[in-house]
Image (cartoon, rainbow, N blue to C red; front, side):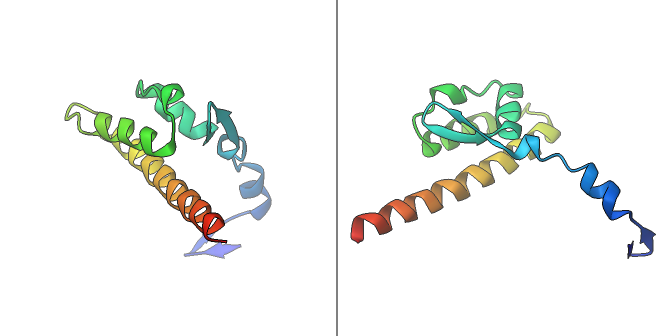
Length: 101
């Protein structure tokens, strides 16, 4: 496959996909990806103690306020925060709809 003037082999791309890190694991009451867990561990965020995704968001935001946080780690944490925030929103909306029915 030719994309933007560069040749790519679909078979190699598919073979190199890392699907394991995007698989979910149960942590207490939460479902987090293995990738998220690794990033949270690396940044010493006590995700095991979080009672909800909202609680975890607060813990991440507190760490991100630290000005000495490495820029690469900040980028990773922001990605995790975005993912968790989105899941928390849809979980809330789903729960809200079930109560109305």
